[in-house]
Image (cartoon, rainbow, N blue to C red; front, side):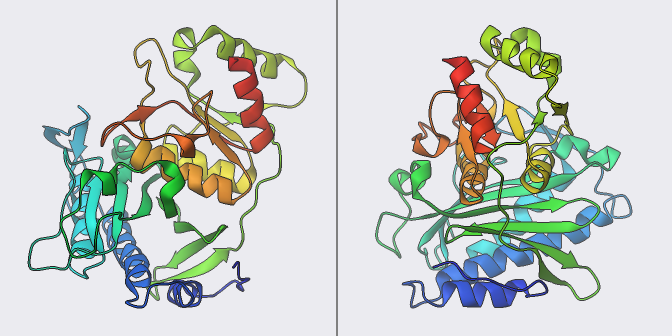
Length: 331
């Protein structure tokens, strides 16, 4: 059941009201969401003083994706894992930064939920003070609570996502949460140290005239997609390009203002580059709850079943009619 909340509602009050009717007598889901808020505040504080804290720059290592690891990547990854493993709410934590899932130590309870995250999306932008963020999805485990998580608990299709969201660390810190078919945004007041509802019940119109894509790779796209984008530019219908170069930042702008984000397959990455479990699934869950759509070009993203922990996908996401037009062009 969707509820209407007034601006200024705290995240804690929102979580209490939203989860009090859930079939979760232990309160694990509410605790999990509160811990996400806590970790987000920790990461926000460190991002805002990264230069003073000596957190800028790379560590010199590469993660499982083959990408250079930034110091803030490590901090964000550890902050979320430490916040989530001890309350006994998670059976497993899946991170872009880790080759395998993190299971809670034996001294902690193995909880009901699987948490999948990109702890610091866009981290290559850290040193130039561009917008970065955290992306996450929450699944309900399939195996019995209190036992070690299994691969079946983790490799679930997107249709099994029960809540998802992201945090934007920019001019302000905004946590966007999709739960119970509704999307709400909360802005962190750094003085009080609390998130307050600032973007209630976010909804997307059927169509917009903004697209976000790195056209530097257009030479390597499917020719049908290249023709579709060229057609938008020549149409005279007022289409505009808006591209920041950080997935969470581009998606957030399009969610608030309208637009479609494209990260297509290329000759170099025929399977796409974005990861299903902790990038495509959570953003697809958010956009559908807001009335939009997400596709890999031929299939609804949330219908896909991941083949591995770090499975990749093309992604076309935003206003529903615009995503449908891209699918039609690729057919």
